[in-house]
Amino acid sequence: MFSLAHIADIYNPLLLVISIALSIYWGIKFKSARGLMLVISAVVVYSLMFLDLNFKIWPSFGLDYSTHTATALAMCFFIGATLKKVWISILLLASLLAYGELMVILNYHSWLDIFSTGIVVGLVLYFIYFFLRNSRFLKSK
Image (cartoon, rainbow, N blue to C red):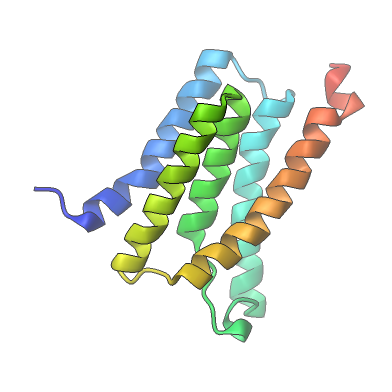
């Protein structure tokens, strides 16, 4: 029988499988903006985690950087940017909120941990995605 912890453990790997499947389906190359989005998303998530571990940014506010949230958000950004359908974006947002509630129920993180991580990671990813979509360098290739 599946427990809530099993569901939480499956969420990010499922998003990863979907992201990789979309990459394969669309033939996304790393030279393309879409290909760079997935790679840069991972770099952003784990760079922020590294910075937090070394400089105690979130703990200085009494919070915890949520790598679970950051990873899920990064892959949802990628899936949403790849598929570009409003109903898929709404579904992804609903799944992120449900995942957040699950993490709170399981005492992995608080809502403040989740929202603070989501805001920082979301803003960084948004500006990177905006730059990549509008980059002349990438469009000329």
